[in-house]
Image (cartoon, rainbow, N blue to C red; front, side):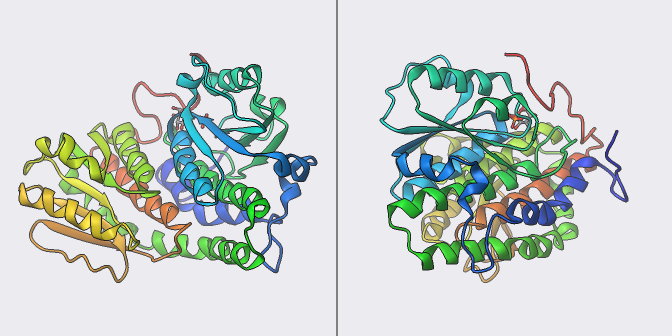
Length: 368
Ligand code: G6P
């Protein structure tokens, strides 16, 4: 391998621990000292194009798609109509195309066959503008779109994606700012989000200090066959990503649901052998999520609740609260993701699995 493992045991571990600096690199020279975004970083035509954009369609596969799901909520919250869709589904549909629409493809490799085909389909359907958010600077994808934003995570060797995902989220926040500026985002609002991004690398370093605490949970999971992940809002895609990481490398069946759907099915599966992992930051949805946690608890299911420091949720014989570093509303999904990456990593190590090369999976899926 061209990339040295240094003192780490696996590439995945190394890449998890690189996330503070990866995020700092993603932000480098893209934000000014007075906390403003440099829109030209998206490309020479970026200002002109972003001034026209009235709707956004995000296309991606796998982990990259979950970044798109989070971004959809962000863009909508800024008044920008947005849909996120799995590339392999979009490429075979004929959706209605809004005027002045921007298609955004998200990809670590820039070579995923379905995402490339979906971009092609989007341009045939009449999407006017295109942007690639991509980690691989010379990939196919970066050659076919009008605009490109490199995520700058550096080479990602482990099949299970980690730093590519978190830098995609950071890049999508930059996109949100770029588009929201046209829709009345004030200088103060922009500065607030940019400062939150600036604080992120050090918050990631603080979160990574929890490595040993999270590793201690892995024994509990190692002999389980099923797990359920719950989240709400921007943290529902994070629950999906947490479940994907666990299934990819630990081979434990993991399902993720928006917590409000609990009563519509998954509650039937809860028993003493099926732990639930709740992604429960201290936000406006916490009260709702607390009620869902009680529903699981009442069925005798063990719960691992990832919340923020100072959370009102308390541990008891069935609930184990893991308090992560508190961060702002936009970067909280990133912090929570890293905690779940560490969990999946340690469970896979405990089980003795080939962490970096999980069975049946490839780093980049270049065939359909
Ligand atoms: C594969 C990888 C995933 C990745 C997905 C999309 O399934 O194992 O980690 O999320 O492809 O890849 P991309 O390179 O387009 O982000």
